[in-house]
Image (cartoon, rainbow, N blue to C red; front, side):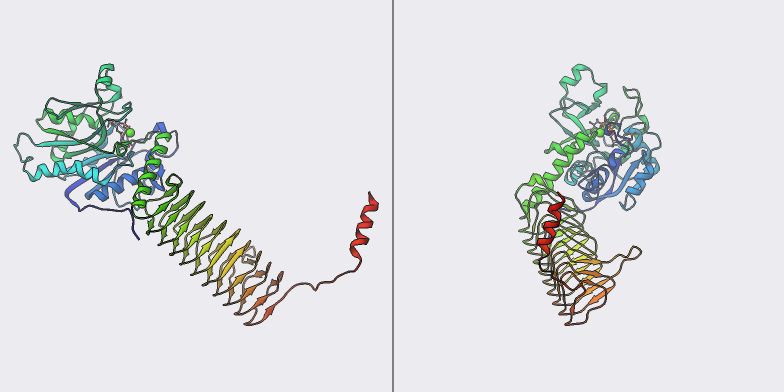
Length: 485
Ligand code: UD1
Ligand code: CA
């Protein structure tokens, strides 16, 4: 069983600031932009997860728009939250974080909560430029050519909307000009773009942050202007280019959200296929990040694995399955099934069209068949619920067969009641089991019975009107009706 979480060693004296205060007007949504999700995780939580895996000592998230919503979203995220009351730009957001969170770390990375595809490796790479510089003592007081910042750049096919990077003769970055502030010539000439991921020498950043101004097209304080300021102060600004430009995709609209989701899906699926998971069509399999899978698992089209789902060796899931927080044991075959908070042991078969609800446990070799719903119930080893049943709040022993159409009547309109069914019992088709009721071992219930009283071990439970056959009835009946015409 493996998972996709890979973490790096902690980076000493480091902090990451994630900017997430913006509204995201272009999303046309009531939710704050960074609260939108990809594979069950919000954009900002993807960014937080990358920062944590990269090994930053502190992770500070700047929130603002939808503050209450963001606070509850991040209540368990184990990050420091600071609030930028008024969104005066990315540079202002960093200034607010430095001030409110009293950031005094040697290395400070800054990136945006709307870039969910960034990898921990990449954040690490840009931050290490600063860390290595410190080790080489380049950042010592008085040193002329210490590194003030490093940033990730890219050359996207369509650069519109991105800040353009001005690279000087020495290969260093001289400035970043925002798209809106570019002249037509600059827009054509400058192909390298700012990804919005930076690592700063903490001291240089703190010392110079007040020098930012808002003399630009948007009247905002841009963090991107730190490049010019640091260069003017004699600091080096280095460029780290990224191999996979997808990592830098900023999500600003619903279209970009869907694009990012598709890339994340492909990335996760590729990782699992490399681990020995089989997919007939990876475009039609969606796996959330906290899922754990084993080798030889087969995932068929239209399978959605969510939450803390685990699928063990040799199990087959799909087509058309949605499993949430569900454990599937080795060798089980789950076809067209929805399962939420369910435990499925080894060699179980389920579906097509089974609905398994919270608290259900299907033990080894059990079968939950077609058009059935099972809620908060244990189905014992080798027991079968093959067709058209509802089983709720029930404990079923081993080797039991539940006949087609049988139902536990667990709800009397006021409370839920329990049903017990002992080992090797045979529940005849269309048995209504009115809970609370206890049916013993080796019991047979007659088809069509409504069982309201307990049935002891080895007994037949029968509760139905006796059958009468009336001879000649059909003929009389048909004649009577045909005369009416
Ligand atoms: C930004 C960069 C641009 C870069 C691009 C990459 C600036 C000025 N520009 O542009 O150079 O190419 O990202 O994706 O930095 N935010 C706050 N507080 C604010 C303003 C923004 O927290 O006052 C947050 C937003 O919530 C968002 C992030 O900062 O998560 C980036 O802001 P956004 O407006 O999306 O910047 P871009 O125009 O994309
Ligand atoms: Ca953006």
